[in-house]
Length: 140
Length: 136
Ligand SMILES: [Zn+2]
Image: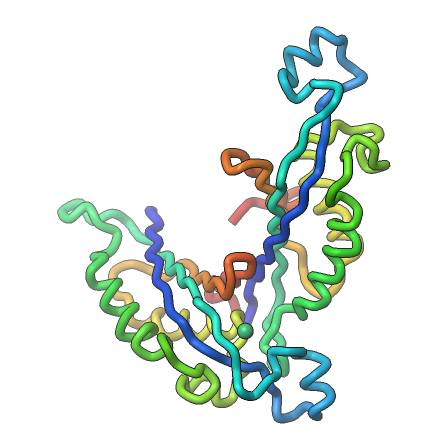
């Protein structure tokens, strides 16, 4: 039987929303306070949802040790307590939470092979959250 | 179609062990959860049902009935219990959050008459939950 497992992680990072494709005025209008050149930070909550048949011998979709290990190595070590703008992932894209969401999805999609990746959800603040389920999928 | 979610909490203990595995395998796969004396969680359960709104009552489901079914079928059996020893489903299955969600689904699915069961969500801790939609 197929179940969907969601694990929640926390990380903190800073960013500045600024696009080189826009004029200074346009950046200010588009990003407002988030355009402050010194940046600002958030405590992000990341939810990773994976799915698959529940293994009869373990009762699990995948071993949490594997999922936690992957996320720790590939996501949290990369972004926790970092300035997102200085990361290679955001050399060309603006580190909005939309882009963070799809970036994390792609890293998991490429590297995590123990279960099917359903969804990546990020809460930037208590008021804003973002979800990505890949292309051609609908949020359940 | 309208979806309605009812929440409930229960506290229970469990441990993970597969008698077909060697002691070393059990330890490697289940880690600290393999301790036969068990450990406990405050589980949060979310049951979502779906259906058309009854034009007379304005309800998808009679919440009082849903609450009763939830108590009778799930909470009376699982709250303040050692899942491995006191809940029959787990005499042959490991009481992981996945299997718990499936067991709760199976306990509820035939008992609802008007509304249809949509999802069972079980939180083992605030940062780990499993959804089961009755998928084969
Ligand atoms: Zn446990």
